[in-house]
Image (cartoon, rainbow, N blue to C red):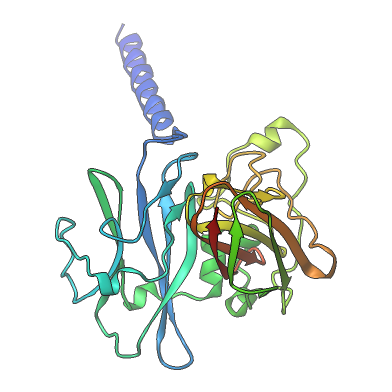
Amino acid sequence: MMYRITRLVTLIFLTIVVAGIATAQERRMTLSGEILSPAYEGWWPNEDGSYKLFFGYMNSNWEEEFDIEVGQENYFSIVEPGELDDINVDGYDFGQADRGQPTHFYPRRNPFLFTIDVPADFGEKELIWTLQSRSNYSSRAYGTLKSDYRIDPQVISTEVGGAFGSLDDRLRTNIPPELTLEGEAFRTVRVGEALDLAVTVTDPDNLPARTNRPDPRTPEQIYRPPNSIVVMSGPGERFSWTIYRGPADRAKFEPVQRKTYMDSRVYGNSPWSPPYTVPEPPEDNRWTSTITFDTPGEYVLRGVASDGSMFTYQNINVTVTR
């Protein structure tokens, strides 16, 4: 009798443990209703003695996008250490607020999306990005020059799952792609009129070298969960246009642009999405497309070139008229 009681207790305990593990490993895919958070990615020194600070964001939704204009809900501050630790303290200053941050926010993780240079004497000051994505929720990213935040190209590659997560030391000196825009960076177009876009992208060091993702052949291989904390993408030159400022749902690219955010869902038209394989670049490395707007206004397009590990950006300011 004692053996059966002990065995029963053991079985109950194991059931509880297994259920707890299953709950802990459960992954939820929330399409909308979640929050948006800014992210400070790190810094590195510039040759002139100044410093470059990297920022991005995490949209916890898989589908919902946000449009948040620069202002009381989307602003930067430069303050002394600890001055804005309390999220309820308003740090808005019109003269500091606009640092070139996005106002349109795509789903999921958008890392190393833009940079801000600070002077050599920045010292212990903090460059803080405040975002309010919900009426009752604000969050901040605190940019500092603390040594723990110093990064290099290999760190960037690792954080974005570049080169299938490779830790190759050569990535420490990886050179980002060279991106050349054809035409002016300021354009005017009418509603419904197609605007032609063209860029040339080259990878000066061919690092990391193009390698295709192993071709999954069964549903089990395609839908298996990632085997690392950071989802991975393959190396190889790529380019996409995004809407950086302005409502993305009022614009249409032709052809449809591959995603630049880390959408890891299968068949997601994303370099992080199995079984996606980075295609060969076009002839002469010249990428062409068009965009059409259905609503007048001011928009900023951002072209994103990548070798799978590093990124180069190009903005176009577009005034859309009737």
